[in-house]
Length: 107
Image (cartoon, rainbow, N blue to C red):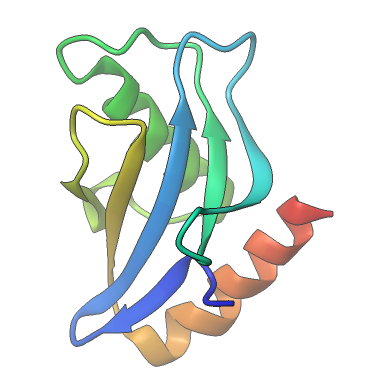
């Protein structure tokens, strides 16, 4: 079963399932998708209008993973709960670090 991270030439692609208008901002673990993949579940308190929830997701992940906000970009699903985030950087350095952080969030 593929994980939520996929290496690309200039970083990583991260598959997310976002729940806006939640009671708190949190990385809530992993979830299986209908097509057999896995996504990282994220909850944010922001409302899903005018990109507020997307901004909250980027801010939450940047803070949790100690990355600059500018290295995270929503590349697909801007108006959908299912999103793809591009994490800019060296994939060889980012992959083990983010995999460990995702695994610890899934516990």
